[in-house]
Picture 1 (cartoon, rainbow, N blue to C red):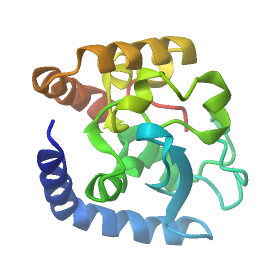
Picture 2: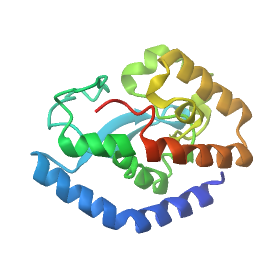
Picture 3: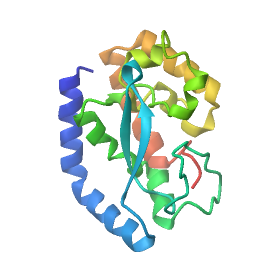
Picture 4: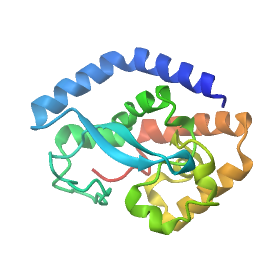
Length: 187
């Protein structure tokens, strides 16, 4: 989608979801110590590093290096509020601020962690030719239920075939997994 549409959707999303974000922020503060937002370095288009925003779902200090340590079923690092936010993807809503900043798009490959850059060749790898997205082809194909190599292949396929029509299809396919929590990282 054109950046102007992404930004308009992000602004509308933040406006509509602001009461829910306020309630989530209060719940996070009542549930555990630490900040409401989790800030993590990610790599986006053209290899640019940016600070991705999410609602904090784990106890403070659980991921001190910001390397995205895997979260398993019953992981004690995940807070009670975090379990619900991860299952519903509410923790991702602050990504809309990244869209407003022009660091992310609504649809695209998920932004890479700097720790994973050895897996990619930054020069010539298709995922770095586009803005990373909040949702994407890999997410609607199985989210956390599919392995890393398959996710990368799906993201590469998306970059090669991206279009407004495909983006709309992905947005439509995102609704059910978000509502059901299917394929989300365990909390």
